[in-house]
Length: 250
Image 1 (cartoon, one colour):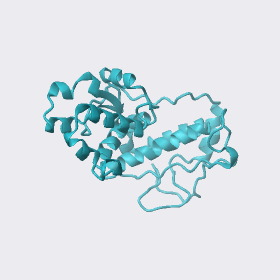
Image 2 (spheres, helix red, strand yellow):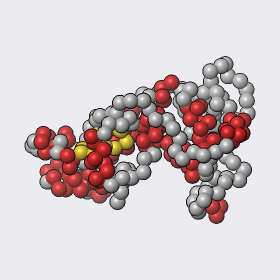
Image 3 (tube, one colour):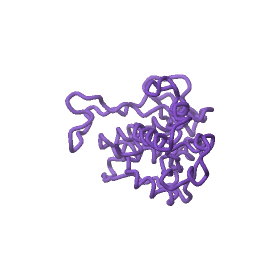
């Protein structure tokens, strides 16, 4: 599929999921995060501090807790598991390539997911406030949020097509351009059973996957493999791609 689709209108929902914490927690977390001087422990080229004022010499922030709170159920951090890493580095200017911008969004979404698994709700709130200071990221806030959507059933994805939502696009399970080149009609290409609503960033990832050589298809790209295949096989591969990228429940 090409990377086009419908993006829902309306304001962005930036509410935090299931966040119940004492206001004092935010103050304690903000003491650890200088929201306008965010940087990783090791400075790397290509990244910047988020600053509204001239840079100040401050020690690198450390957001890894000394002893991460344990989730209600066993999970990350138990039995000597990895600790929560620092927030990802945010470039001041938007990367030129779409895949690079998507990588930044994916890194942010993944870190937020891990921080929430540590029940670091106040820290997530502070980090969100920090990335809001990066002007180019504001337009991608909805995409960052929807990237964290859990997998859904095929029925749910199909029903959502008629309900526009910011940060999502309509995706063709069997690629529409490839179907057109193979002689399928527009009615077949845009049939309700071929359409699903997916997170925008994952839509881009799936599109890229179709263009990469794959041993599963004899070294061909999925797009090349499907060039002479019937609709049933195109839908099967399309469903597999949705499962691979966490959009469709297995």
